[in-house]
Image (cartoon, rainbow, N blue to C red; front, side, top):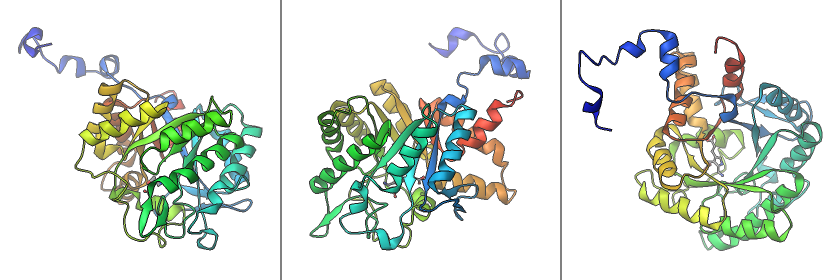
Length: 336
Ligand code: PBG
């Protein structure tokens, strides 16, 4: 609608509806709910482990028993789903990422334990080889190349053992071409026709993943960068092509990652496809807000809420964020 249709000052004063708190609430176009949140959890071997991640203040690596406790907390808060990621020691990593396809790996053990005690919570599995490779890349290297098609074979196996362990959503975060179709086919063939695929469809080669790589043990391990498979930050049309392919290949939902620097991509994706669209507020986004807050340079609480609210406004149906428990706790208080 043309702006003139609403009239001009002083007949129209946009400040009228901003004048009071109740009115601001009434005219707010988007608001956050606990049901918008997915809580990322970093797993670690052992029992009773709750190990702080230095570059992600407030985030801990958790052993399976501790992850079960957190899952109960999440369910009590009304958070719909958890996204699990594994820390892997350098001595357990290998060029062929063999732990990725081991049904007794940390991810699968955690899924079984959580589903046994908190069956109502949604569980999302990372499908990617970088936690398991000794070079930290998301693929199998053949002749110095992250080999697309060989990697897909391993990803299919990984997704199927994750579905068998009880994960409800498998979420490929690797950016190989064609992996969604291959995984969908593999899941159908194995009888997992209800397992969802959330594709990390538009995932950028971003500088904001540092704290995550620290958290999963990839920090000192990764050689080079991921620009031969993750997207160039300058591209936007290409994101739509990635998303179109993934939906065609059988993704139930798609993701844009990172989130806050890529709000335009979220909006274009939602407008173009009207599919369930998620955004990952990644580790570096979280770390920047927490670090500036700790210095007293910004109001951490306000920045936290604002950072999530704008992702929703841009068109995301749900947000994966390390702030999930904090936001859920705050939203459940009557004053909101
Ligand atoms: C890779 C992967 C990454 C994240 C999750 N899975 C990034 C990367 O190393 O390329 C990042 C999540 C975050 O930063 O919070 N499979």
